[in-house]
Image (cartoon, each protein chain N blue to C red):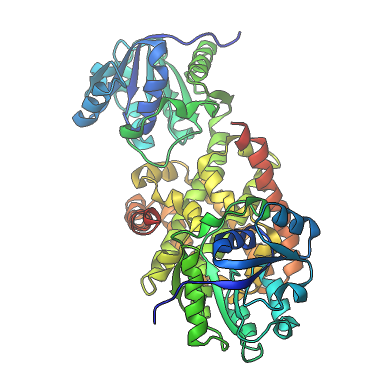
Length: 295
Length: 295
């Protein structure tokens, strides 16, 4: 069975931030009606006003009932809270429920506890923007990007097919894997980089207290390395606290690499340093060529 | 005395890479003749062919003799080697000698040993590009960027004025400071970020050996955090090995920040984590607003 075309009579997007707004826009043409659910009335008004959604609800129950597709696009902790509390009782049978949170294990576990009949699957589109909020929502951010799908105990073969059709509709490439594997990968490629970025900025901020020139002279290298430190903190805290073990593991592995480079540097083993860094450079160049440039 | 207008009858740029080519282009209209000095005949031919320089020399002595301004734009070790060997004897008296290397202490020390009569000053334009080589030379990369000037024992008041005029001519903003302070700052804002970036890529490469999906799923956060790992290794090894002490110091400070964040994460102190990360985020946003966006 190939993934068919995605369509929905009533699609509810819960959480109208950058990601929720963007997926609402990307699925506009595939749904008869798109409902945006958000507790913030100003956000709802904005989404409606800009035509990002067809209708809005501040209340979860009224927003998701009758929907045949529900996309959870809130921070991870909010998502877990909804799943563990009332969401299951609000959904009609056969609804496709998918989240787009950045960690998958806890969410997929919680989805597995939903009433039988709800077709739930975990999702994570590997895309984003530096800024957040519905004001920067953009239906194009999913194009040609991987979109991870993780089975739950409420995932049927039909759930999987429907989710893949949704992924295809927004232009992403479905990548199926189990939640633990996903969480380990994102710990390395996303959460570890965030922690390094924040620790770097904390280090420079401390130095800049006594010498403002640290900020004045900081240029492109610092800009790129420090960008993730500007991420929304509550969102990151949710992500880190639902992926602590994998992040701690990757951090330990990172520390080994860092210590090796530091030892060569301090002992003045320049040839060995070059020998170690050259394949690292090649890995980065290969990644750009094989993955980044093809998108 | 304000910095006057820069002019040169014969300007020699030693080392025709990205930086040398770019500064040659930026100073084109301020010099009667620009000589490019590079041991690579293909590089010389390219620079001449594209009009980046008016004339070329593969031999250092013939390139710099008679020049009233000499800019050293080679990797740091090559620069040190020239300064410690024959360069001083090739230069005519009253020549303005300035380098644009990324570390300043060793170079400024070596400049201080030059014959009296040579007007030498250390320089470091805080700009660059991801790619290297004369093929991407661009006279515009200096515009509105800080350009650090560091005194040497061969810097006279006139040297300083002339160097400032040169900095002004290429559109940069002169920032005077001593070499040790410069080296500590760049250890933090540039060399530490490089080491973190390389260690991150090494960590991911190790994981990707058993799971290629680490590369497949890596997205924007990884791209920015890993960019510096793609830097030219010989250039970086020169930089690190001439700034070992400051880099090791900043690394130790970084490790303290990292350990604090890690401890909060592992112990599940989410509130404390948010409280720690929020001012870090604010520092990054303030830097963007106060410095990066004004350029």
